[in-house]
Length: 80
Image (tube, rainbow, N blue to C red; front, side, top):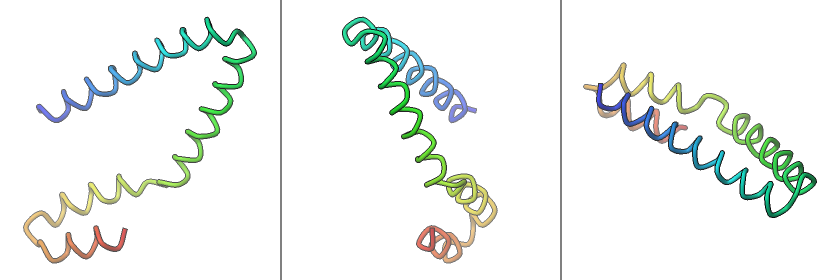
């Protein structure tokens, strides 16, 4: 349960930091600069989603499934 709490805290912290960063970028760069930043960040985000393509989900599933079998875990993590 503590892992879920830490994951939630990290997501909330990252979201707040990004929100505050957008306020400062909008203030200093104006509407056009904020638009360029948002477009760039969106392209970067989609690129990262397609680059990862669910690998972390598969890795979490297989590690949990084969927790006792260290050889299988090593082969899966080395493959990915």
